Length: 222
Length: 244
Image (cartoon, rainbow over all chains, first blue to last red; front, top):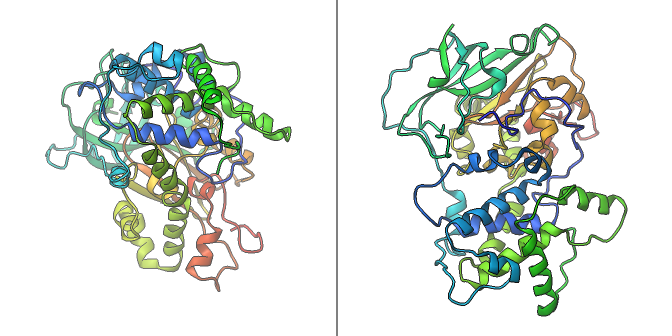
């Protein structure tokens, strides 16, 4: 979707806060929030909406105002409520309702280390598909404007680039308008290099390049 | 690790906080983010007052623990992991090894995932690693314009600025301006290569080894390498502060 999250190339977002030490959390609640997210583990229906899409459909003002971990917590609460594992009454009182729905956590102190270390690759080494493009070939990012989740950023659409690398076959991540992943469509993912001038015009440095990783469906011959 | 003092509070007090916080969980967004409020409080030298979002998180944890849906010890273990095991010191060891071992450097640039695994790092958000090398002629910069994709096994969780709108919006259109903001000025002749992590590849920048470090051990070199240098927004300074 053409949402506020797709912000590559936008102006007016202000200065970058460049001074930040290397601690992962800068307030206790950030660590508790992140730990909570990882500790809850899977719950609810097995067919889940794309988590990134759930961020993307937040109202733009809210998306921009919320702190990163705050956004995750809000979405976790929404999911728990949708799964009827948390009620408004519980949130209002700060206490569990006797007899309210619950589940036994699958993530425990005993297996959390293994959970955090687990690889979750979307690469489909089991699928053999001939790549449509080869390294060095010119391609154009298609002018697509899907309403669901997509990994084709607006700033590359319609622009001509060069295949820099072929990373093999990966599951396609685009979703339908409700945020559910589209039917199985594994395909090659390429790194495509664009010149800064192709993307931003003649004011850009003639040497500079911008690379994006793009699924084959996003590309056409150029 | 926390800025906020975490004094034990009485149950009654906690629950009233929890309730107030919980009610806010579904409320409309505040004007300023909690992080901003925390920073303002820090800047003014005040003791940090727990922000609204902190109370909401505490309330949620309290409810889920009471319902048996999470074990607080699991949360403690997650925090401990990201504070002491998964962070930019891992990436710094990878970089230092590449600086002292040309064969390793070659493997790292050819197959980042495998070479990083040689040092014992891998897993979630590091499944498909590509390492890009800074040279006198090329400077690399990593961003995720769409969200916050970042190579956790080698760099840990991303800093706030990496996830923020100012960095995500400008890194692709004005990388040289972004770099200047971080204190790095590049000559026009140096090529800037920006890598937008739009799919499943995660990037690590191999910074230039600073001059005057010939006598240092691998461990001493690793201590010089910063998170920011491995994202591409800083250079690595030598032991006496001399840049590469």
